[in-house]
Amino acid sequence: MKSITVMLAAMLAAMAALGPARAAEPAPKPWWKGAVIYEIYPRSFQNSDGDGLGDLNGITRRLDYLADLGVDAIWLTPIYPSPQVDFGYDVSDYRAIDPRFGTMADFDRLVAAAAKRHIRVVMDLVLNHTSDQHEWFKQSRRSRTDPKRDWYMWRDGRAGGPPNNWISIFGHSGWKYDALTNQYYLHQFLPEQPDLNWRNPAVETAMFDAARFWLDRGVAGFRLDAVTSIYEDPAFRDAKPTGGISNFGDPNQDRAMTDNLPEVHDVIKRLRKVADGYAGGRVLIGETYLPNVAELDKWYGTPGSNGGGDELTLPMDLQLGFADRLDAATCARGSWTPRLASTAASRCRVRQPRSAAELGPARRRRAQRRDRQGSGDRAARLARHRNDVLRRGTGDADDRSGAKGRCARSERVTGWPKEKGRDGSRTPMQWDAGLNAGFSVAAKTWLPALASYVVRNVAVEARDPASLLNWHKRLIALRRAYPALCDGDMRLVATGDTNVLAWVRRVAGRPAVLVACNISAEAQTLRLAPDEAAGRARVLLASADGASGVDVAALALEPYGVFIGELAR
Image 1 (cartoon, rainbow, N blue to C red):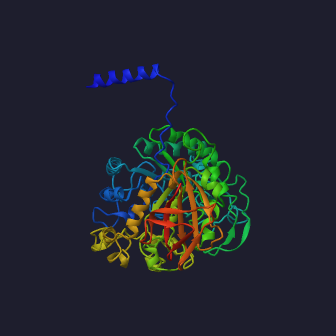
Image 2: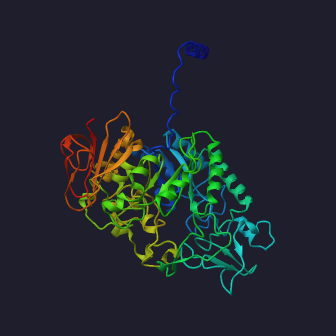
Image 3: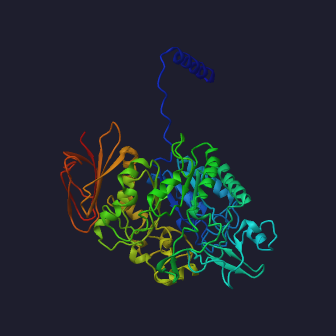
């Protein structure tokens, strides 16, 4: 049979050579273009061994759920050995698995089982800092002459205090004094997270080797934590005050001395070359908190022939992630502008932790105040962005805005109650109405399941055609079926409407698609000009039951309603 196949291939090749020249077939679309990536917080997803803490085998057990949802990849928050002061983002060994989560064999089984379901695994890679328990830092602090000393940011104090006025993102001075060598080290995050010195080539070599270790094990790439912060001003100049006081009680500062310095782009280009050296389209996803979309676009790098630029594959678009209000003007600004919507071929939209109340069928049942712990605009985002990251969240804003006693890490209490921390978004996944929401059989879980799990869980929502879970399944399926929703140019329409966010997406050779989201608690009628959209639209997905076709000149939308329809050619 093999010889017949070879002969047939040779005959076809000869016939092609004799025939007229044919245009080259277009390169296949990279898997990550239009992908839906599901973030998993391993502590809270599924426990398999009864200790009350989520683990790798628990994730493997739930892969069928993820496949049914329709995701293309899962992103695991850090699973490396760690003292867990910052719950894994303080890494003490970049080439191992924390025993809390399992073994390397468990990880390999997860990658293999996910691949069988056409799901890729993306790792979190923390580049800016390590744990103070990492061997590198232990050696670095031994003496001023240790070979690892220059792997971290050590400086003499100034006038009896820290070297400068830089403030940690987690509050108070970004410098910690170490009496052993009478110097300060920089920590842009917790004191237990000393910053690496990326101006030392040895640091880059070590971190790139760690990346290769996981790429060799088959991971699809990395989400790069705090990647914009890996370089600081080499002169260590003071930060400029911007006025006001932060939630931690510190003076607000401009971060130009510690964030988004130009040197970082060269590092990312070199890391991209490492990733591109592996088959399968490995990705670099950046945690890119940036002041505007123009700065965000720089993180793609120089356009090339690899389906994007030469830096990040997917910079996270966080322009809407921390919006504290829900209105059409807020949603339309920044990354929603038509120019960038049509040119950013791979922008990655990330959803911050939200409650179960969203635009769509579930959202219109509860009109509640939106804030960073409240409701989101997932229908709008899935229909707008080329890539989407689903961040698992549970409960309502009321459940998760948080009692102080629910915080599992003491530093998050700093700045209370203005700074609530993130534990309210890390409660166990609510699988069913059983013990601990089906998350664990333990007598006590690391965080308690929310009381709402009895009535709000995967099992209940799977049976409800109008549930948020099934709404997401339909949205994800719709993205795959209609290329315009992932790849089409975008034009905002009815821009004067303050309550409805609407846009039209077009891809060559296909009918355009209209998306309209009522971002208000009142019924609205969307009125479109003839040059924006005209005639009737075939309903593809809508939050309200109705006819299969509607007149788009005057489109009725119920409170928080969503309409997605295919326009007549």
